[in-house]
Length: 371
Image (cartoon, rainbow, N blue to C red; front, side, top):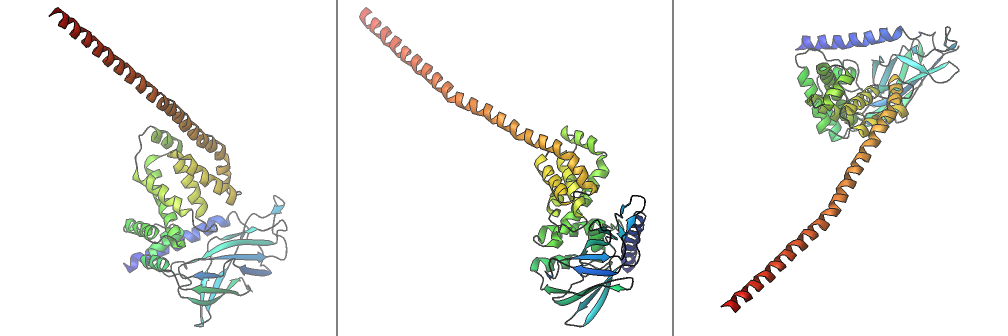
């Protein structure tokens, strides 16, 4: 068991290293910055919640892409985070590996920043802020140290602590945070625990995060079985596809969209939710995901693809209510005719009965006279 855990942890670290190196091919490793600054909109959190940390690097000279004559789109950072528990005097260091690059803040090309989710340490089974108390944070890159940031951590909620207890295996966290599936043996159990947290611990960030990851995993299961997007859409419309993974993916992706905006997994969650709801012809839900991508991540590749799909989804979304309205109008007109038809039939029946009574009466009188 220990060997397998170590192997999976090594795999997770290797994946993160690979992502860093691939990103490095398209980013610039600038000179040593002159200043590092850290900040957070929310500095009061609870055990079991992430801290969204903004880190800004300032360089003495503009970082410019000579080929384009513009600010470099991305700059590699080199940073670690010091976390000091002021009440216990304990100081820990954590590597900051994802995201591995910073983006320009303005056209001056000297200030680059990014938001980081401080939650679990790489390979760890416990959150960075595992106990309530007062903390101080400082980032360090190269030989430059940032300002100190004070953070207050309150006691975790019942749902939050329950979620942490259900994800006590480091392999669960590798799957949750980095999408590392690890060994195939035991993967189904890891995914099941993510679903358990998502279903039983609603209302906390960790539950939303587990829902997001579970949704992405079911999306991949569905896609691996059914091929290309347009073909799947046509087959589903014909009723040729019935797959539980589709329904589970939509269920958990919908809930996973509630994760913090800064969480790197969110654009992927929104885009894949849009794709699946489009397949199911649930155009209102698909349009909601598309609008969120356009409004929140307009410059991302997902945001651009969402913008391209918006007009089509709006037409389809508007067409369905119109069709339903026409159906209601037809039903309403028929409903209005049915009472009139019933009254006419009733009158005919009553008239026939009346005529029958009269005829019988005449026959009876004639017979009486003859006798």
